[in-house]
Image 1 (cartoon, one colour):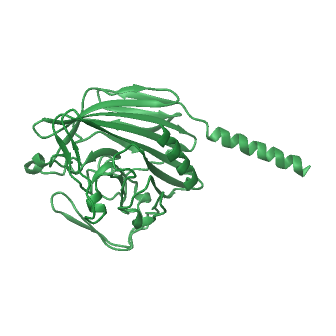
Image 2: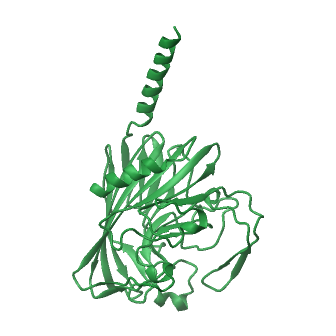
Image 3: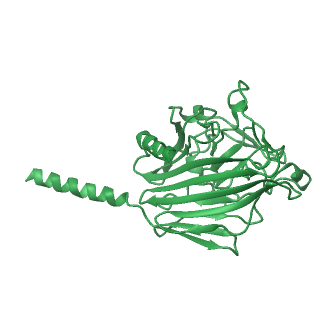
Length: 345
């Protein structure tokens, strides 16, 4: 009798696991008036693509896990209690760079004074994105990387593919940049695909942290006074915590507790990307970024990676982002398999 009960229980477990892993339908809804696109997976809002003129770049914001938990910081668009208010240019998930022909696209935000705006670049979405819904949702947009005078340095074409199941959300991003003039990405720390994590996914800080904003204002967060963060990093090469920063790997994962669930977010690099595998610009205070073009900083000057595009030339970058929830974090084995599968695409 016990044998049959065990077999029945195993069958039920297999059914539940297969149900949990069943892909959910994706619905992509445009709101051209508000300049945003909402992405629903199942019946839950996953994220929104925002491209209003008030932002210096288009972003995905906010990002939700499958259980509905918001995994990105609310500040500055929708500040939440306890949100750190450093780096106002860190909004949801974005793609840009610190030094393109001397212009800083990464750090541009409302906090930059009018007198200094000429030192910064804008990414301006052109027209309404093209979208589709189904087992995978897609969103394709075109944008211009410009200076303050609206001279176009590069034309960007980005395609997102969204998918998910009961415990997972996946974003595949392909971005192609075509030079409208000779363009130089000068080796720099801040780039390229970035996201700002929710407060709970920051790493616990034992030492004082000092932040200086674009106006020179200094904020000091006292070490040991913030009991909310539970996060940690690990890379495909086994680097953990603060040791993940400046190291290479084909994937990096941040994980922590949010409510009763474990939440993990992994970024997977693609073998066709320049300077693969990427360097990880993964900071304990909540910045999680993949930057293949910051080699000089990350190697303490031992080597340099400058990327130049002649007029008409282009370069593409592909990344997969996996957001997972449940009673335990997504395993290294599953991430390696996903990286293998992604690399074959």
